[in-house]
Amino acid sequence: MVQTRAKSKKSAEIISSNDDLLTEILLRLPVTSILRFKSVSKHWRLLLSHKHFTQRYDNISKSPSPGLFASYTYHLAPDAYVPFDVETPNTPPFPSLASCFDLPGVKIIQSCNGLLLCSTNRGPKGGRGALKYYVFNPTTKQLALVPPVPGGGRKTIWFMGLAFHQTDCPHYKLVCVLSAVGPDVDLYQIQIYSSDARKWKIAIQSFPASSIFPARPGVYWNGAVYWAPFPDNSNFLYFKMDSEQLQTLPLPVGFTCSYFGESRGHLHLIAYNNRQDNRLRLNLYEMLSHHSGWFVKYQVQLDALPNAFPDMIRHNGYIFNVIDVVRGEEEEDTFVVLKTPKKIIKCNFHDKSFKEIFDFGEYPFENFHRYIETLFHF
Image (cartoon, rainbow, N blue to C red; front, side, top):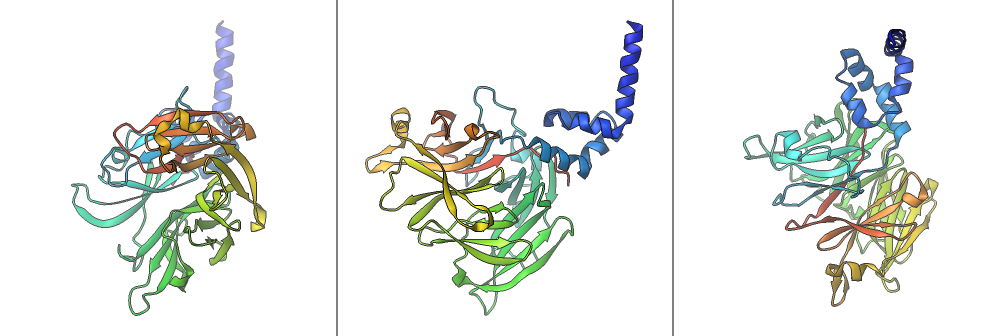
């Protein structure tokens, strides 16, 4: 027995003193274990926070999204966490945004591959102040204040978006679109902030408002930020990060976009033919590589939903919104998340099953942002 213990102790010492071997073992552990092991020693904390480890871990694990953050636009309700798996729900990454920021009135603007772009115009005592932006990692609880945009007073910022990906954009960036101030009031400007350089730079000095720039949340995919079009516009607008150019991307002809997003490296949209489509049939389109066109990836018929969730029935049709499409590790694990006036519903594209995962109760949540675990270290 003593000899066995001595061998085990010697093996543990060998592993703990060999960073390469230790790394290979730790790469196979869940995020909760990694965060806990950071407190083992200073050496382990440095090892587990190093860019080499965190990037490898995120690229290897590629864990599916466990849930959504839900909030109400005017802060009349506390923010909530909605787990996708209601049978074995994961623990919320934090009790509330306010507890992490120690500031009131914080709201999530965008979720991008595990990082959150947040903002608030409230000071520590609750008084109104200048609008501030933060990048927040809900997994590690790290927070970074974004420096003010040069010339970007609150009235001129038209859009602020986050670009981050563990492979093609490992140093997060921010894209800010400003409306020009002065005689050229019909012009926009684009500035980029790099967390690597830690400064803003002008990417596009000016471009005309006739470009119909949408004041909508952006989606980062494949090295560019995309904006879904308004119902009366047939083109997507997107900004390529490397060439710093604005380009357009057409919708399927004759369709109106009802959902636009990215999941596990795939760009998706759900669109309806204005005159022909059945509202209860969802066609999920995916973008081909090199922007060569859209194709129908999944279809799901929702005819059984109105009987199960009568709150979505109205005299002239049905009321529901698509709030997320989540690709699984396997094709059969891909699902769509729907919002009715009172419920959030998860529908599987493969077996057509559906289940309620959240009841709004007294709070009509309006904004939803996907949670993805990442060890990205600021």
